[in-house]
Length: 55
Image (tube, rainbow, N blue to C red):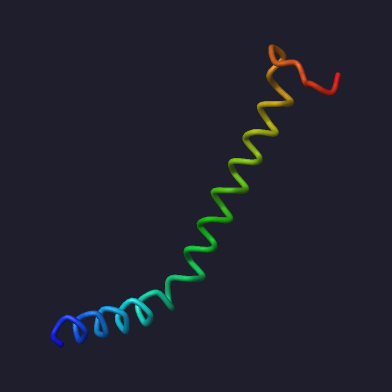
């Protein structure tokens, strides 16, 4: 019985603690993804050693 109470408390804490972190986490994820894609595109444009498969 004590384990169920512990899991219930842990579940209530994680649901309430995650709520304020959703927007900042999403913003960080989108920023990192956009910088990664920008860097890949920049490398494709500036690196003359790699040949595109479309050519």
